[in-house]
Every structure is written in structure tokens, then in C-alpha cells.
Image (tube, rainbow, N blue to C red):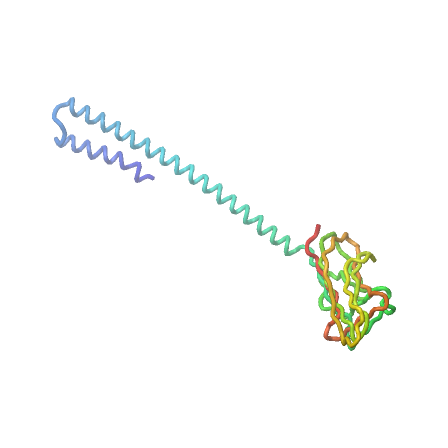
Amino acid sequence: MAHATLFPIALLGCLCLGLASGQTRTGDSDLTVELSELRVLVKGMEAKLNDSSTKDGDLEARLNATEQQVEKLQTEVQRLGKENQEGPKVAFSASLAASGEARLKHSDASPNLVYKRIFTNTGNAYDSNTGSFTAPLKGLYFFSFSTFGYHNVLSGAILTKNGEYMVSSYDPPATGDTGDTGGNSVILQLEAGEKVTMTLWKNSEVFDNLNGHTTFSGFLLFPL
């Protein structure tokens, strides 16, 4: 911008030198007219340069403001990402038999199925002593389970919320049947302290071994 400001001054100097060397019209009146015209030209050019400088300044101010807004947005995204990473983590997955084989009848489940082989229990919301999942906070939770009935038996299980039936699997006995697998899943809204458990249909049974046929899993989708 400094070089642009010097330009009209240099132009005026060059033209004045030209006038002094006789390269303009003769006579004092002609010289006066010429100098007046040059002064008007220089003032006009300076006005344009000043206007351009003002516009450049406004543009720079707007750019600076935009950069500040972008920085604020980046800071907010980083904060939200950190909060999400540090948010509650609740997930569990387990199967019925921790070793050997387990064949449980309705009369053996008192009253819940207790899954002993723990694959994961992040947040420790599942109790392997009682078979109950207790919601640590209000939120939406996803649950799934699988059941296996060995030979010609009634098999299946019921997922309950605070003892109330929610969803189930059910497979009646059939002649010549060697085994059946069932399962189901559900999304439940739970308050902190509410319990989800698995129980058997009356006169039904399930089988499991280290192949993990009969399972129970769940996790927090998001808090409310």
C-alpha cells in the first residue's frame, strides 16, 4: 500500500519536470492550467487509494472475525468429543455355563437365569450372582439373548423389566427334534436402579456349554 501511495506523487514530480523542460504548452497561463489539472488528477488518485485501503481494512477485519468463529467452533467440537469419550460406558455379555455343561429347567432358575461366564462387564451393571442387570443411570438400553434347547424339550426364555415380561423366545417340543435355537432383542428405557433379568417358561429348559449357546447381553445406547 505504501508503494501505491507514492505513485501519484512520483507521477506529479515527473510531469512537473516535463513542464519545466519545455515539454508543455508555452506561456504562464498554460503552465498554471496544467498544474491545476495535475493537482486534481493526483487528489482523485489518492482518494481512490484511500478508499481501497479502507475496503482492504474492512475485509481484513471480517476475515479475522471469521477465523475467531472457526477457532471457537473447533474448541467446542473438541470439548464435545472429550465429553463423549468420558461419558458413561455400560456394556455386558455373558453365557450360561462357565465350565462343563449346564442344563437348567424352570424349577432350577430361582427365579432368574444366572449367566456365569462373563465375556465383558464394563460398568459392572450385570451381577453374575443374581443374573440381574441394574441400570446405573436413566437411559435407553439395548438387550439381546439366545437360547438353546437340547433334544425334544420345550425351550425358550423371557426377558423381564422389574419382573414384568417384555420379550421372549419360545420353541415347543417336537418329535425327533434334536435341538433348537431361539432368541430375541429389545430396546428399553430404564430409570436408574431398574432391573432387567432372564427367566424360563414353565416346564421349559435351556442348555449351554463352552460353545456359548445360551447368552444374555446388553449395553447403554445413550443416557437421557
